[in-house]
Image (cartoon, rainbow, N blue to C red; front, top):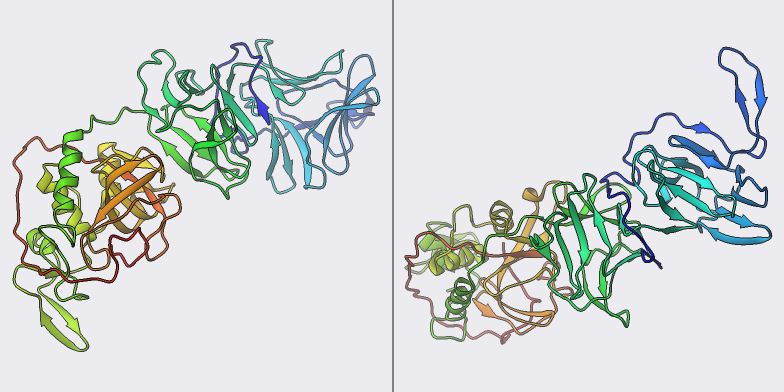
Length: 491
């Protein structure tokens, strides 16, 4: 595991294209044990001394070496694709990429030393981005990357500054170290309390986002793609739940967005830098109080009547759905005061509106709650991303390239939080309004097997006038009493 200790403040840079999206000029191959160069305007080939440096835009290919001035140490790009540093008879560092298909090592123009396959896939990178960086094998046998300001950024496989451009696979961030955006304005760091936070460098007190859990001693970029906050015993306290994406790295952009980027440059997780609007705890409590009063076993139970018809009073109140439902080939009228359609979002829209929240933009589609959160900056991506009572919980799929076009399979609402477990209340859960038991949000899906996308906090309406509705449904006994999420749900 690589950490960023020992380090002093150096170049403050980061790039959203650190490991492969940066366009390169045609590299110049240098560093062969017996390299040659062609004199411009002729066909004469001149043998030159072996180089100890790799300048911006230059590359090494299989079988080439860098030699230090004393001739004792050399860095070899072996024919099997491993980059190995030899000091005398000792191997002091290597890239651990044997037989993985590497064909070139390039000192990119963005300052990152990168090994790629013939198809351009990134196998290994130094994670040092700054225009003008170069690689050098020094007289003592160390393999170093220097900035254009002659600051040592990386040596023998380890970053040597307090700041880094990104957090690559297997690297960790400890207290006092931070990732910084390309323009030097934004940071992601580990606070003295052990929480991950994002904030402007010029005003660290203006925190835009913080992890819901503190007490960590390091932020670890697991090679499997999961960003993990760990304690001194190496227990995971919080994570982004993005495993199964090997090679992913953490970056902070000039806008302050902190994101996880795959080797294919696809964002699989992000948090907004802007401080979300203040969410009223009283509003959240009111949402839960109203919702629980309509649970199938409470004083105003709501259950589909008849069961399976999807006839419900919330669709009627909102003017949604149809007045009839189908039985076989026959059209049957819903009971008075109800209309028929999949109604988890009907219940949710009615619930927030009744509690005094803004409901504009919400629809019968559960994913409209994610769109609401994106529009109001109250969306929190991830199953463990700071759920609060009254928050909407959307199950489905999230499109990182176009967050507004994802899929919602069900929407429920946070009724309580206990550690990393939550309790949910939702409509159209086993054909009723149901308050579940506590469950682990990272492993529980709905009946279609969809995971939790994230949480959306309601925004208090400027008008506090509440609207109430009277239900005419009759309680129906079900076989499942307050289940944890598992059963049939709806959009």
